[in-house]
Amino acid sequence: MTTSAKIGYSRRLGHFGVTALMLGWLIGGAAITANAAELRVERGNTGPSKGLVQIVTGSSSGASVRIVEDLARLVDDGATRRLLPIVGQNALQNVADLTSLRGVDLAILQADVLDGLRRQRGQAGADTNLTYIAKLYNEEFHILARPEIKTVADLANRKVSVDVRGSETSVSAARVFDLLQVQVSVVNDNPDVALAKLRRGEIAAMVFVAAKPASVFQGIKREDALHFVPVPLNAAVAGAYVPTTLTQSDYPGVIGSDQPVDTIAVGTVLAVANLLPDSERYRNVVNFVDVFFTGFRTLLEPGHHPKWREINLAADVPGWRRFQPAQQWLDRNRPVASQSPRDLQGVFAKFLEGRQQVIGGTGMSDQQKQDLFNQFQRWQAGQGR
Image 1 (cartoon, rainbow, N blue to C red):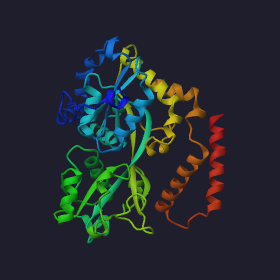
Image 2 (image 1 turned 60 degrees about the vertical axis):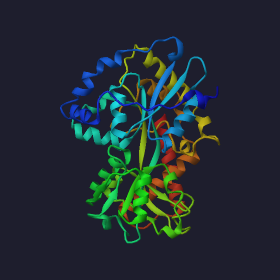
Image 3 (image 1 turned 120 degrees about the horizontal axis):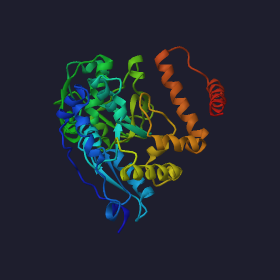
Image 4 (image 1 turned 180 degrees about the vertical axis):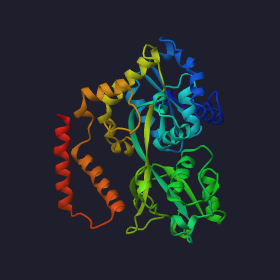
């Protein structure tokens, strides 16, 4: 049996709905506390579940399923280790499943979904219930609109589809429009339905957060007269998201060769359930971390999802605690976890471009950028010592 056939996908619903989860968090985390006992139940350490780690992904149309397929091929050894993906229902339900559903060990979550829930809960200790193994790839914020929509401000009071309720896109869109102080009339349709409505003129735009190039936009042609709207990078947006660009190579049917579209991206996080350190599940996750981190370089090779090349295992997620065994591995193997100088220089260049958009002023020359990067490397080496 092949690894892909062995893996399979299943969709599970949490024991508690999203409404119950949100209410529990708002009254101080009662929902999580009430279900803490479930996390103490262990799977047996023999038979099919030996070494099993279960991970919740995003929708089947997103990058997370492909990412987990790559991880499963790396981790599975046919005897003592197995990674079992579960295709999630939506962003909020995935958090609920990770915190309360028996047997779910890991989940790939968008960072702003976690941030949003923490803000709604409004407690300083909200981060104690979830830890993370690593910051993963970025997902781009797409706004596809009709010809009359030139800027985000043009969407004020217009109908904009933001995917189904509770989805990653709906959570991100609510926050981004709030940061931009643009009030839209929200419509909740899945991306395929939204695109059909957009073509018919029933809505002004659709938002979709996904790793580029998103498959839903691949069939768009020039004659559709649709285009991507730039996302302005003010100080508030820059504090929560990272700048990025959509290009013709991403969407040749929409973007011209000399017309890149500036937008933003949100990071994803590999989060861990609140497992008991002396449990079998905890030991299985520790084993997963060791195999994943040790074999990470192989995921950068051809044949794997290109988003792996964006990942720096040593990158921190501000405001969140790293899973202790993952932090210990990084402390022991810091040079292995770090990105290559070439990869790091590319990320550094993107940072400078985004910073320049925020602060304005005269741009830096290539030599100035290189000199500043060299200074950064010397500072980084000093921090390592």
